[in-house]
Amino acid sequence: MNTRAALQHAERLCKQRQARLTPQRRRVLQLVIEADKPIGAYELLEQMRDGERRPAPPTVYRALDFLLEQGLIHRIESLHAFIGCAHAGTRHTSQFLVCTDCGQVEEVCTADLGKTLQQEVQRSGFLPSRPVIELLGLCQDCNKRTY
Amino acid sequence: MNTRAALQHAERLCKQRQARLTPQRRRVLQLVIEADKPIGAYELLEQMRDGERRPAPPTVYRALDFLLEQGLIHRIESLHAFIGCAHAGTRHTSQFLVCTDCGQVEEVCTADLGKTLQQEVQRSGFLPSRPVIELLGLCQDCNKRTY
DNA sequence: AAGGTGTTGTTACTTTATAACACCCGGGTC
DNA sequence: GACCCGGGTGTTATAAAGTAACAACACCTT
Image 1 (cartoon, helix red, strand yellow):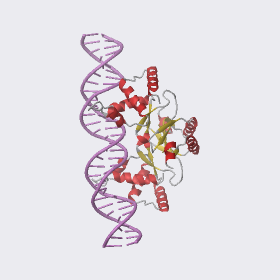
Image 2: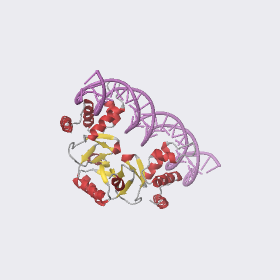
Image 3: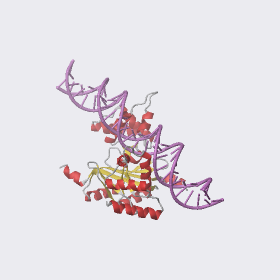
Image 4: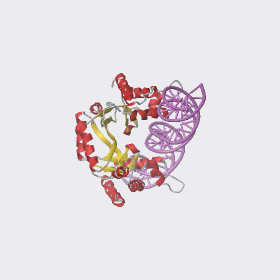
């Protein structure tokens, strides 16, 4: 992901929505994007360290909450970690291919899957708000490497 | 879920597999099943309390690990909690409808969804091992109640 | 009896996340 | 300007979830 472009995009989106992408929030977003793989809240805190002092956890969690609300990042439940959203600003249902070997996560977006889920769910009267779809396994590279 | 039947079924399965469903593991399984909604590890520990003394966390986590390996329970990642498996012993890919209001979780099993996922995933060369599919939202009852 | 394997008990600790309260800054209003 | 209000931030403390490491035991095999 191109960090500069992503940050500019985020700024446009927030402006449109009158949401305040403050310097602190922007910085957290930048760190998440630059990590280019899921990064944990406490790892972020380390990267925000300034000399001796490191911000306290609520600092980063508040920024993360904001970024999640704005759809600028995703939370990977099975890893307790966060990654930049590859489709910020568009309505989409993501799935995440989580490599248990190298830790890389790919965000994919299968339209069919979203539909199938909707159908199943509507039949049972369930009203979905947030889907969590994560596939743990081996990415192509790590899979090859095991031969 | 019928607790007695489920426990008997679990015992049969473990016997077949030469896996040891010890009294302790059986007890944890029973507590998970009886809870009838997702239950956290520390809540289980409380229920295992005997007078003053409560077992230490590893006790329950080890039992939970065993039960997960045997496919007798599922872990709901988005809740950090565990529920009994509705299809123990059968190969299946489950989805979980998690009500954010009442906390109930329904395990559904849409064949199509599994297929769609497989296809998507194979195209990208990803080799899946464990799927995590959870839909947070409102169950039918809680949805109605909000009107 | 000796040794091996798997289960349990126990202590201590790490990692992840949140509650509660104080402070500060910018905008509008009197 | 003085005031208030609301959102954002700083800080302390604590809760909740999960694991490492080692000792003890139980059962089976040789």
